[in-house]
Length: 375
Length: 138
Image (cartoon, rainbow over all chains, first blue to last red; front, side):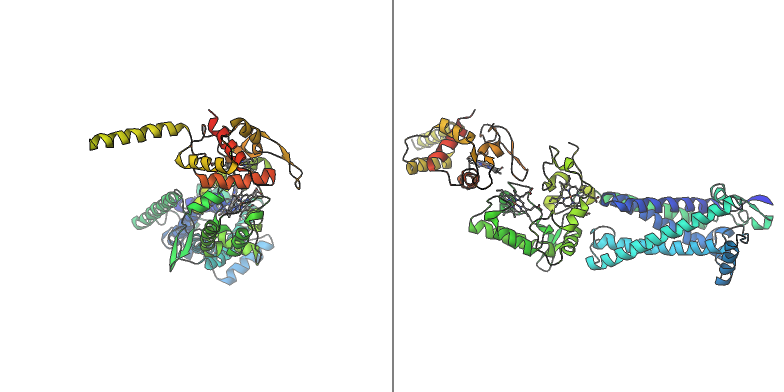
């Protein structure tokens, strides 16, 4: 037994960046306002996977697919040995890990592709912003999360197995991924010296680092500025138009709610009942009220191209709520916010949307636009 | 001679303008004149307006005490708060020059707020007194 170098530096770097960027992306998917970080980490996962794919053809022996991708028979016999707690020893990846590498790379590709579709159809952002419909994006979103959970499960199994190898059989696997060195049976098993990094592959590596850096910068840049809701207009979509009468009349007792967050049937009900409006008399002269009504109907949730609009619509089914704050979607999004926050001096009420959503006049409730006042 | 007349008119307009800047604008003075006729009153009283502003009344259905001060606070120069919790800019023109410049807006809110507090419309006399009180605040 000798300790030899078996993992080249690019493979080790890939391994840990891939793990870290996936975990970051996963953690950042739990809150909408982390979306920018989720996307950046996701871009890294994708860049890592693409690099690893190319490295699988041009890296050193233990890094090449040909070095560790085996047939079913060999995978089965390895797993049988593993279950009997007597796994066959491999200097590089064993057949099970070989399979896991392929599955993880495939999942990363699925995650990347569906992620771009969700980003395009739901958030109207990214390289294909607005290209996919909301419905396509929702289906893609489902696949995206199934793939993410599968990835997480596979990573869990992988970590558990690695721990077993290290704790029971003392193979020093985990350390080898850091130092590159592992105990091997013979010199022949060591593979690193055999194939020096070629100029070509160094170039590939460099290109990927540059490309992912560019992607990070690009997503970072998109994160500034307000992206308002788009509403259907003659033949296409156009930015939400402001209406002075609406802001003046419906913005005096409370903030002027975004018309994109309730369906037309709700706005009809609100406008028909202004004389008895939540305990107040909000009635208007006929001409003003019909102008406002027409504008609300033209910019209602059905006609708006924005994620919250679609989600509010599906959360209310056939209903025609008078309140945005009553919809299941709104409640779910604000479940973490306590009464204390709403009573802060610069918020005063849950209906003061603009206090925390400065983009609300543009119909933007984007996560990067959310800022909850501290006092 | 013609130029002199022109200049004199100009000066007169400027003079009138500077006087009016402190009082109601042309539209609002018309409104006040109209209210005077309707009320059959020779003049309005800022003191009566002050009383109206601060008067408290229990709502017949809601059984709660209501007043103009509920939303506008006891200081007309301070910011208030609507029932929906939105900040209301001060009502006094001394603190908020936009106030009492748009007759339609004033009429709309008189109608709404008098209903809310008194469960009836305010009389022309009450409106005139109220505007006079607000205008008198320094």
